[in-house]
Amino acid sequence: MSKSSSIKKLKKQENFIGYLFASPWITGLILLGIFPILMSLFISFTNYNMISDPKFIGFENYRILFTNDNLFWQSLGNTVYHVIIAVPLGIVVGLSLAFLLNNKIKGMGIYRTLFYLPNVVSVVAMSLLWLWLYQPNFGLINQLLKPLYDLLKMEPITWYLDPKLSKLTLILMGLWTAGGSMVIYLAQMQDIPVSLYEAAEMDGAGWFKKATLITLPLMTPSIFFNFIMGLIGSFQVFTMAYIMTSGGPSRSTYYYAYYLFDKMMADKAMGMASAMAWILLFIVLIITILALRLNKYVFYLGDET
Image 1 (cartoon, rainbow, N blue to C red):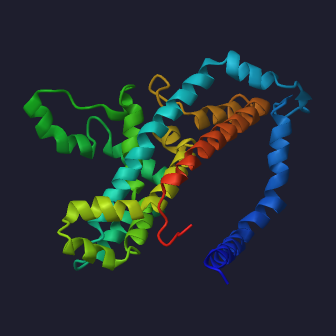
Image 2 (image 1 turned 90 degrees about the vertical axis):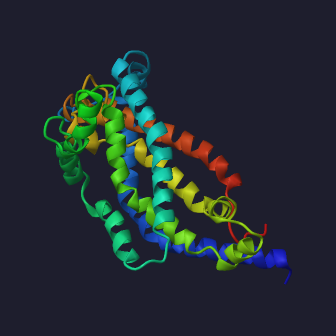
Image 3 (image 1 turned 180 degrees about the vertical axis):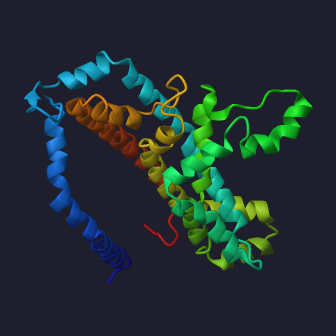
């Protein structure tokens, strides 16, 4: 058997195993998800208030959103801002934590557990906690910064109460869960062959060169994975803004998912909400497809094709 045919056979086996592991989710989607998805697509073409029967109106919901709804564009702009800042920042923080926690010192398992722990806390509980931490008058963060405020003779930062800082405040709060991506980075970092580092050290490479020429290139698969997942997740940001700011101040944290929620629950405009959901689906789909083109810059260890 030739080398290329054996590689193709191996790839087929890997694909089969992958689909096998994904089969419970795929089965659940087919049995439980297809009908609601198609039903929401139908409702997006109707005027439906969840009380009377839906009335078919064609593309009217989409036309109104794109041409006659300023809140639609404002909420989308807020969400795009969140994505642009939160995704790269999350990658940098997650990678930095992985580098720090990859050292072999006593008690490292405890440190890794502590950094991952926020990921098991519900977003609601986390939002309530940070609501207190960010409180301008008696919050812990401003209390710790009080000597700096006094030194610079400046007023305490109002954090989520300031329209200019509110989005950044929520983004910084989200970094508390960077331990989730850190675990993925750490797993791949520890999978890098030690022989590569030993060869680099024999050539006189220091920590920085080993990190930039060996570690980071070989971690591009996990970086790429977290980048895609971060894109998808950031477009759905909702709970933090709902709990902490209620979309304010001045609608500065009125994200797309928040507006969709209000259309459905407050306005009872299920047709409009369904249209917004499908618009979000296509936005995320297009951006994800474009992002997947970056796959050509991903280096997979052992891939000889």
